[in-house]
Structures are given as C-alpha cells and as structure tokens.
Length: 535
Ligand SMILES: Nc1nc2c(c(=O)[nH]1)N[C@H]1C(S)=C(S)[C@@H](COP(=O)(O)O)O[C@H]1N2
Ligand SMILES: [Mo]
Image (cartoon, rainbow, N blue to C red):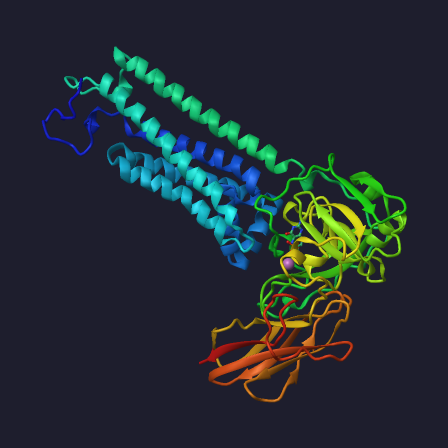
C-alpha cells in the first residue's frame, strides 16, 4: 500500500502522491463527464420546474440578453435561424472546456478544483436569475447541476486516485494509465465503467429533460388562420426612438405574473374546456373543438394590478382566440349569473363579470400570442384575455373551466385575499427613455415611453420638465383603444438635475390623477416621474 509519501519522501498536501495519479487527461475527462452529467440532470429538473432555466439555456439566454444589438443582428444575418443552436452549442462546448481545465487543477488541488466546478455550475443559476422573466424556482436547475457535478466529479476523481495508487509502480515511475498490469487493470476497468456511467447519465437525463420540456409543448401545435385577421401592426416608434418599449412586446420579453411554482405543462390531448354552472346547456370542448370555432385576432395590452407607477408589468400583444361571447352564448348563461369563475389546470380561480365577457369588447379565450401558440408560461394551451381588466380578474392562464355563478355565491382566489372584486385598468403612462438617474449630455434628448387606458383609449400624453408648462408629446401608431400608445417628446436639455414627469388623458377626457396610490387593492394611480442629470 502506498503511504502518501512520494519517492522523494516529501509529504504532499494530498494523501497519495500526485506522481502516482493517472495523467491529467483522465482528470480533465472526468471533470468534463461530471459537468455533462450535472448539466444533464439539471436539464431534466428544469424540464419539471422551468425549461428556460436549464443550465445551458439559461447561460445562452443571458448571453443573448447581454449581447449588444448590432452583434445580435450580425449573428442573425450570418447564421440565420441556426444562430440559437450555434449559440447553445458554443456555450456547452465552452463550459465543458472550462470543466476540463478545472479537472487538471483538481488532480493535485482537489478542493479548489471541486469548488471551481461548483462555481462553474452556479454561473448557470446566476444566469437564470438574471433573466428579465426569472422566478425563484429558476435557481433550482443550476443548484442541482452544481450538486450532481461536484458529487460525481469527487467520486470519479476518487476512483482515479485509487487506480493510480494501486497501479503505479514507484520503482519504475510508470503512470497508472500506462499500465494494465496487476491491480491496475481492475482499477482501470472501474474507471472506464464509471466514465461510461457518467456519460450515460448525462445522455439519459439530458434527453429525458428534452422530452419533458417539449411535452405538451406549444411547438407541436398547428393553429388555423384567423377567420377575421387583422392588418399587420403598424411599425412602432422603437425604430426611431432609442430605448422606448417596442410597440409589440415579444413573447420572450412579455412579463409573467402567476402563483405557479412550476409552470403547468398541459398536453393538448388531455386538455378540455368546460363551460358549466348557471347555464342552460353545459358543454365541454377539446382543443380541436375550440380551434374549429371562429378565431379572431385582437391587439390587447395586458397589465398587472400589482404594477407600480412606472413598473414593468405591462405588455402589448396580438392575440388569436375564440370570443368568450360565442362560447358563453352557446351555453346560454342564465339571467342572475353575474360572474364567470374561471378555473385553471393548477387550481387558480379568477372571477370576471359576465358583462365583460359578453359585451362588445370581445374578450377572448386566446390560443396564440404574437403569431405563436401560447408559450407555456403564458397559459398554453388556452387562456382568457379580457380587454380593460387587470390580469388577476380577466386573464386566467391554463384555462380549463368557465363556471357561470354569482359574486355572492363564489369568491375567487384574489378576492379572498382582499384584492378588488372587479378591477378595470386605470390610465397609466410611463417614461421608458431616458432612464431614471441617467447622466446625459446637454442638447437634444428624446423623452419617450408608453401610455395605456384600455377600453377608453389614449387621447393625449403630456410631459413636464421640472416646473415648466406641460408639453404635448407626439403619439405613435394607433392599434385601437385596448392597446397602448407609444409617445415621444424631443427636449433641449440644459445642464443640471431635472425632473421629468408624464401624464396621460384618455379619450373620455379624464386626466390621470397626480396622487400616487399603492397597487393594492385596485391598481396604482399617479404620475410617473424620473430624475435625470445633464452634464
Ligand atoms: N392560472 C393563473 N392565471 C393567471 C394568474 C395566475 O396566478 N394563475 N395570474 C394572473 C395575473 S395576476 C396576471 S397579471 C396575468 C399575467 O399574465 P402573463 O403572465 O401572461 O403576463 O395572468 C393572470 N392569470
Ligand atoms: Mo396581475
């Protein structure tokens, strides 16, 4: 047995002398396999909790988020639709290469190597939380990756150490990997079997994760065209006003608010929509039945009641869906029912006035968003979208049942938590650019942002610099009263500290009130104001 002393007799920090360990490439390879196994299991876990938080995808997405627009455009122009696979492949290869180098370190400095490997894996958890749409559970896949990666690496390195200790011939100085004699051959077999095991774990977990994150995936659904298509959305001000919210919010950037710890993965095959309660003819539809009804397109800006003045929980999208009016008329809602209590697959209940779901605003059971099937995080396969109402009273995701009832008889999830029972969206305006507390050069600055007053429409947006008079901003394209308006105002900025304030007026002539209120219980009121410093 070896004693932990090298032939020179000098004690090394590690129990067995490094010269008796297999060559560095074994450790590098082991670290690569352990990293792959960790990432594979992380990907599998992500398939359950949050596919976007899969370790490689999270890093890739954050790379995309952080890439300057010109570079992104170059990548799209150069690689076309292959840009994403290329990015993901590069991230994966890069991470494995780093893991390999860490393996070399781990050969002689075990704890440093393992710590570095853990840190590498945790980068993906960090990347996942940096995403604009991240939620707490997005941390889990990265942590699992770190745990599995470090544990399997430590185990594998241990096998290598033991192999080295038994196979090395101190007299000749033969390295373990050069010898297949004596005890060494069984050690080598063990190491190779372990390596194959790690490879298999990586591959199996990784592909299972892939299956999971695609199960019930929107990408498998083919949607029929709208019976009443809209003309394309006009070009937005984002082409000319740098830093303004895009007129249409891309699905990937659309805010996400829900109570679901794990994004429900609903398969189209098993999904049903039941319309029952106080109705004459209760019925149940399959997804195909739903798609067979007339589909209409609507441009609707969705807003969360929890959005603070100036906050991010608002987005504009083109929705495709079936009118709730058509669905409810088919069931025949009895007079007396005043609310539709909608239920989601994961148990959320949301109450919406029957009125709002049957009047001319044309609320939808939406199946697509911006030309794509609903993303899982936004309610795949079907959700409610009610123009003019905050999401918590009109935008049930993963919708599966609409129950006609009364407010007196049944209370929805948020109502039980003392939020408003009926909550029309309040008029709001937001300054997107410049950003608060930015330092800018004196001269021409374009102030720009968005304003919304769903169901009423925006008539006017005004901006005030410090205590000067209100100046009317120019409005961007108009996509109807349920959609937000972009606006901008060029400003000749003089040096100093300035307050910029915005307020909107709706088409009924009501000016947004100045006084701020908290979002609870019926939405925030008040003007958005920022401070900028001009040099
Ligand atoms: N099933 C379900 N649907 C839900 C919620 C939820 O928690 N569960 N949250 C609602 C709230 S508060 C809002 S603001 C919108 C947000 O929709 P989005 O995440 O697609 O932007 O969804 C609504 N629908
Ligand atoms: Mo919300």
